[in-house]
Figure 1 (tube, helix red, strand yellow):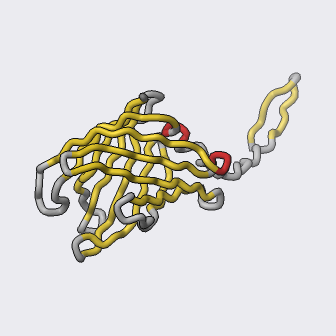
Figure 2 (cartoon, one colour):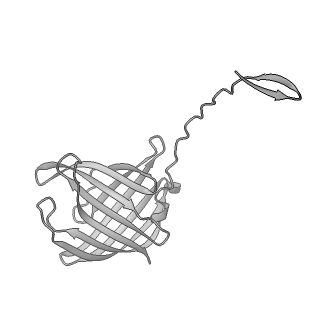
Figure 3 (cartoon, rainbow, N blue to C red):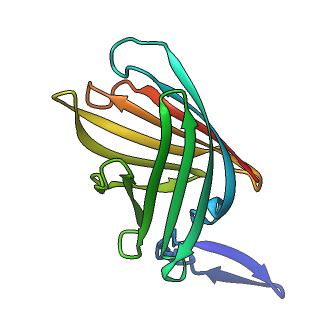
Length: 179
């Protein structure tokens, strides 16, 4: 019990009950808003991932991302010229309001197939997305990271892990700047 002197009298003060704040679910629907618009993309990709290779190929490209479904989805179109040829990719970003996560769904013009989705979210200005795939006959983990986000630039990096996520080997990096 805590006592206080008020107007010359000693008064017993009741302890305050702690009010538990209900956790507020973070709405991530606008996480990718920074990515909307037209971008120049400087790309580097590792020629032979998970082989110990250190040979990188550089590509120049452009990317356009636009909102669909009132911002609950985005479509990204990437075109790049590399020494090995021309790349055209499509990425569909879908927001799930129940899980507060995004799925990233990629397709390349060469095969016209949507790959297995990656799932993830943004925390502290960094987006991390994961999936499990088969690469050259073995199961690996794939991670994509969106970081260093400013109004005029951001970074993208994809990495592979063949040891269950203990170590990661970057194999695709892009620096994006506003056009």
